[in-house]
Amino acid sequence: MIDRKLAPDFKAIDNINLIKPEHTKLDNGCNVYCFNSGDQELVRIEWVFNNLRFDAAKPLLNMAVNTMLTEGTNTLTAAQIADKIDFYGAFLQVDYAYENSQVTLYSLNKHLHHTLPVIMDILTGSVFPEKELETFKRNQQQKLQVSLQKNDVVARRDFNKAIYGDTIYGLGATFDNYKSLQRDDMLAHFKQMYQPSNCTLIIAGKIEPDTLTLIKNTFDKSWTNGETPTDITQPELQPAKELFYFTEKPDALQSAIRLGLPVINRNHPDFQPLQVLNTVLGGYFGSRLMANIREDKGYTYGIGSGLGSFKQGGAFFIATEVGADVCRSAINEIEKEIDLLKTQLVPDEELSLVRNFMLGSLLGSLENVFSHADKFKSIYFAGLDYDYYDQYASTVKNVTAVELKELANKYLNFDQFYKVIVGKY
Image 1: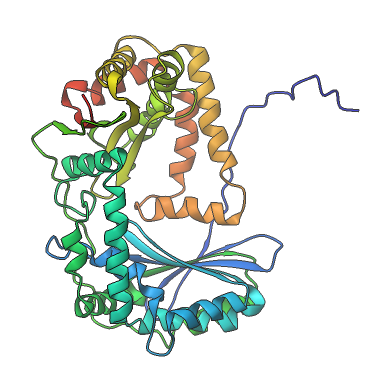
Image 2: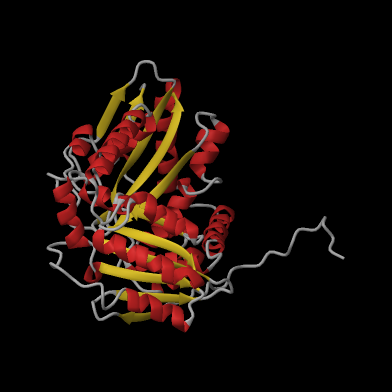
């Protein structure tokens, strides 16, 4: 009988085994990666497209086109698309990110012959109806109006603009941006971007031979390429020269703070040890920033730091909302915590806790085959391979306090931080 008074034995994580996909390429140029695992007759199919190069004159095209894919085709209305998907117990969603956009279908294997033709229709015949487009623009403008009343949203927009400049990463949409969306531009964008040569198809779940054959047959011969995308790269980051940004709101009860600076992306050898340093500072609930700013000082309900990684670079950031009357004090405490990382070694006990948290988080995130596919996407679209995760585990286990101190001095110069404050200061 288990003695509930005794804690389970502690076991170190030796290695992390990831499911690796089988790869094939369709005749139309679409790369297909299959993660075959699981007992349930369910598959998740993702069509991932590289976004076209950001155009500052038409900044919302990538986002608007992907968001409106399900609003109607040459043969189906938005309501008919939803009814067909719902009738077979499937789930369809579209997702937009800075560098990629995707269409995702969850479906039972036995119903794929009904659901796949709907996706095929969307990817080849979306028409962005004028009425739905006007509704989309109106709804997005209303959401923007509400969002701009929130200090943290304004701070994030201002910070991204300062760090990334006039690129897709620094875009803060305006009312006029939505107003200027034109259906003809969206149709031209759609025809160039949503074609097989610009698509990676990722399938995860229980994949029977006939299931894979059905998918290939549906999205090979009848899905053809048109005009080759002119450019799927993104402009290089353009950080601003000004480092301090303050938006005053006299009636604010809280001030939003966002601090940080451009750094390396995940392709750089320092990125993984920098992730360990970030976790120590503000990357989990037991971090130093949480212990100081929340637990000790009581300035905030939450504070955290993070690393953003994109093809054209990356950024380190700290974000929080604090009482308006303690904004300066909170920033001073943040600077003190960064200075401690630069002058004192992280104690062994603290570093051990962070190691266990990071490895445990990675292991805990691999709860099903879909999670393994997500891990693959993170490295595939960054141009990396599975050695990245082996190296990650090794780095987390072996990085030393001395190395972390050196990294703090190399990358965390508080005088070079972009500082964005919205509220009172």
